[in-house]
Length: 402
Image (cartoon, rainbow, N blue to C red):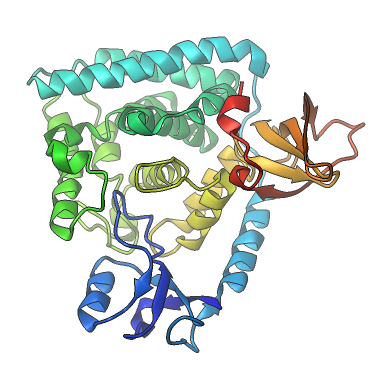
């Protein structure tokens, strides 16, 4: 039986199946195996991990543990509760009309981030003006239809993670901040902060930044320096906004003090730092990496809920889910009819009724003619049963987004 157990209850002889620490950025540590000594247990505790998963059938049991079924049931209930929250502001333009404009903005954003990385590497100062202009374009696109940029954000490549992650984070922060009712100036500053949050990685040694295998503890400490480096680089940038620096500086801080670079706790972290931490973890969780198979969007949301109250702000996690939906764009969902559909648009009135692109029938085990179905349409009789993993059906959702 797989159980979630507190790290305070770990004992030599237990078999770990999941370190449950993907909230730690750049974590590549071994996730499974026997605990063979107390030194290993101490290292796990020092990482700030609160709970891990063990297999009680392969190693020692823990009576205080909670079955994975119970954890999943609680996370599912929390997600359903978040789904009852009213979605954020309605879109103003159909998805098809906004996609072309969004694609241009998305491409500009990737080029801008790539260029500034090269400039900083060569010792050039950051010109903040193009980032401010891009942030305004992002805001405008999200206001017209947030699903367009979200669709593009699901189409990503492993070897372009650093650049695409910065752009995707800016889209998520634009959607998140808009849903929270932030002013246009606050939105602009936090979006720019998201675009530039990883600029400090320019100073991270290449052999560590692009290491395909797991990082040693010493290498992980070197990697962590990028957050402070990002802050320091931005502080010297002419015309930079205070919230831009704050957003970049605090994106790895955690509520329980287990984050970095300052180890801030609770309200010591600004609301913008707590927001960007949630968006950053979510985007990292759902991305395919060299050392990490991305979770589905819904699995990623459940992990955010599981880590709420310890590492992440629980109220802001619920608000994040309200803003992107319980079935985020890119989710593969199973309908009661047995059909599978990829979510291409969230619903302005009810998170539980998105628009999907039908692609497969599970009862006949066959692809079907692609058709767009608005689950909120009055004539529709179908409903979502649950979100599923595309890998279980050999479906690549990236090819079905647009």
